[in-house]
Length: 227
Image (cartoon, rainbow, N blue to C red; front, top):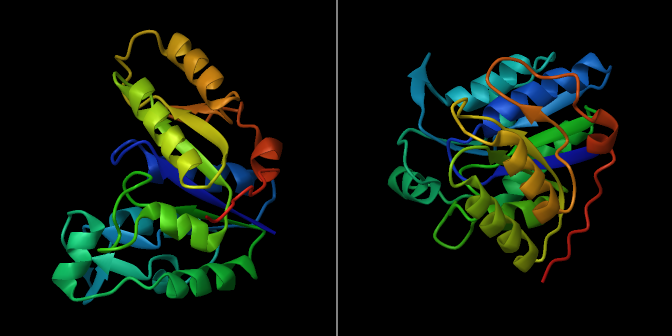
């Protein structure tokens, strides 16, 4: 019925952690959920097949038997920028293949959560970025902000880039990745004003709170305008 694209202010700010928590929270409400990690760099050989840990976490969280290749069609061994990893592997990332996988999952599940790689403008090929993938899938965007020193600047830059790319931010999630961060509430209040809305939820590394606004998350609409 709907799809949601999960991007972040940077790499290492908890996109996969957030995606897994969202899958579990939505499933607890009786919603059937699939997850995707279309492009992943950094993998190891398991039974002769390349497997990425983020994609495996998403697959494990799903309460369905879905082939790994459907969740993660592009998996590269080198833990570097996806466009470099793809070049090393001699692979051209084809957005249509990702879109076909997404559409196949969308026919089977109520919601499909698609996790990006790196940040909003992370290159996935010599010509394409994560922003191009989002436009191809025409999905509403949820931004994960890693709450730590510097996150206000990173969030502002990501928000401006999303707007300038012709896309619209549907919501955001505050992920407190550094428990030693000071003035967490004040930073979230500032971000709420900057991004025009309160976060769907504030999460950390221990558990997902009951404060997740599932209805608001499911009501996200795509205001995407391709330019």
